[in-house]
Length: 191
Image (cartoon, rainbow, N blue to C red; front, side, top):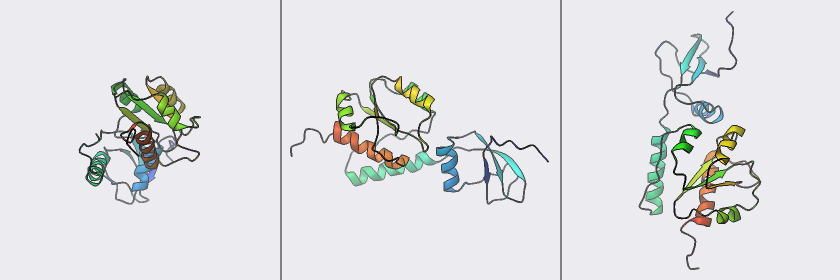
């Protein structure tokens, strides 16, 4: 019997398996690999289908940025805004932090934050016209080494979004609403 490596993730796939085969994963499997295990293009997993044995497979690139760009366009059409938010390819956190404009405010949303009043925290560190980057964590939250790396950034505000743990997509909407209400173009409008 071959020795099993339990450190490599294994997935059951409902498709024939052979060398060179490309298999589309189910949405839950993609979510598990990308958001829970934080694997990406080129990472290795093991796949089996109950008939063709177990195969070592590499994760191919995902088409998620195209779907996200379509969402951005639809939102702009519905909301009457004239600009589109940029949608970049997924990248490791460290590369994102190295590439970002250090003069922009970084709003780091973390369920482990002890900030009781996010409005006050945002007002204490205004963006100063340079812009705002909003970062929400992956499912399962940030790892301690990621938190340490983030807290070394200049112009940072660490926020909690309330007493509940939110899904990543819900947290992004909540964070954007909070930033818009505190620092955005709602400020200073006549009532």
